Image (cartoon, rainbow, N blue to C red; front, top):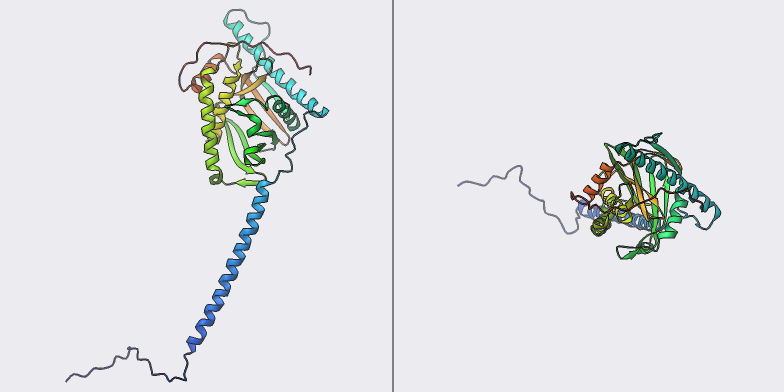
Length: 333
């Protein structure tokens, strides 16, 4: 009869008396308790860190950047700087009007004695632009756009100019009056204006791309709806002027392109207050330095103006209903 042979590798626990204890059984709970204490301490530190970080982020998001101090439009210094900016804009308007007049006369066999310069370089300081924006907002902040007053959605526009970026900021009432800003880097490339969106901020807090994706999409849709309403009324005249609907429609399109991270139409509208219109010019270059911006401008040709409206209307030719603008005179206010 075959007998069972015990394998030398088999586990045969030795019998244990009641008074004997396993050494591992007493140490294992102590190790578990030590690990649990470490884990609890780590979790507690993480929670405290998250709470402190959340508080700091909340305060940073609701804080006001130190540089954001909208000028008092009634102050003499503000009025003086705003007038300097207006006069520079009027210089560009008159130069562009002269350029258009020269081209028109040349095409009809009546050339002028002296041709205006092909380009005009203009420099604005940060103080001049902020004073100009303050005066502009005081004049048009109560204007109703797309069914809402501008002051209900945006207040206190300001810019900060640095060597590699220009920051646009303002207070947003729907967000509890928080100061929202966009850091942009304007680049002229291949005939297009690329307003590269570097950073969006709430207060002093940079916002990750995903955190404001929904508000950005809502803004894009709102601008698209505004464009739809404005495009049928958009007009440009033979002298180069654009009515306020055309100016607003192009600005809305540039906003959509910038928020969508793509280049946009290379056009800058110079305001013509008396006619509630704008004179379009294109940028050859844009140079930033601390506290100032230098623009090299050229007037848009009649073909370029037609092409701009053509693109704006989605490939449809604009109706030939001009508005008429007269050359501006230097501000005396």
